[in-house]
Image (cartoon, rainbow over all chains, first blue to last red):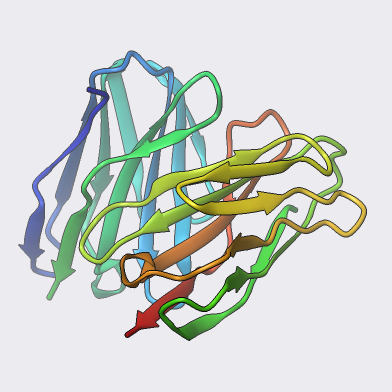
Length: 111
Length: 113
């Protein structure tokens, strides 16, 4: 069964703290994504990773960075989190026929 | 850049009535891939259907859509709404290189008895 996992599922941080969101997939997909979802704005692309150490900015990369050291694992890092980064974050991976599989999401609150 | 415009906001329907959610897109590329994703409450988005072929109807789970390149449209339809269809629906476009999905802002469909 194809699966994308995300950890943690819920996270509360204070402004200025660092945040690490982790994503894993067991499908050997090359391409992975990080999105954030906000009411009225839909899904916005933060970063794309084409494979290990091959990452590209999406539409809203400011304030975020990513790391992909293994194909099955993709991390999103917020250095010094801001209150406007409160959101639901989804990781996804893409198969060879262009379908994206989404993880369960991480609900991040920055106080 | 690429963009997707959907029926915005909330669509409310009575069970049994037909569903039509509009989606139009803009891209400079001639062979776009169009998708509908559905997200039920407290779940993650999942693919509902997709199409690459002009003027060919695509069906899945009672929903259907036809990509019309002439009008840059990919409307989602269903003949009879069910309570379980209540969800957030996203239309999405993939064009250059097919690595990136551009999502519309989403339409909430609420089906009532």
